[in-house]
Amino acid sequence: MSLEARLEAATSAFRGIQQEISTTVETRQRLDSQLSENEQVQKEFGELEEGAQIYKLIGPSLVPQERVEATGNVKKRLEFIKGEIDRVEKLLKDLTAKQEAKKSEVSIE
Image: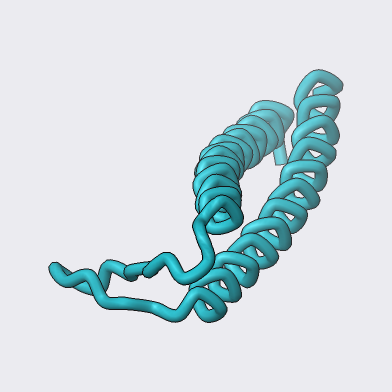
């Protein structure tokens, strides 16, 4: 394989990694937003008076929901989102390492 062909292949791989990083960063930002929203809901649940009615939006309707069920759902969502953030952070770290390796490969050739 000629030098030009190897350089083209390495550059293409580098661009692919950059695109993956971009997509992963967008995912991380979306997860941060979801985390913030759910933490706010959890905080508001904590400030509710005892016996306050909680409603859940299902389609076009508001349906009453038990407080225990609602707080449990928010807690589960927070755990899931935090797990996803950890997974995405690891993926970003791996992609950054791959990007650096390709970057040095492209600059050597």
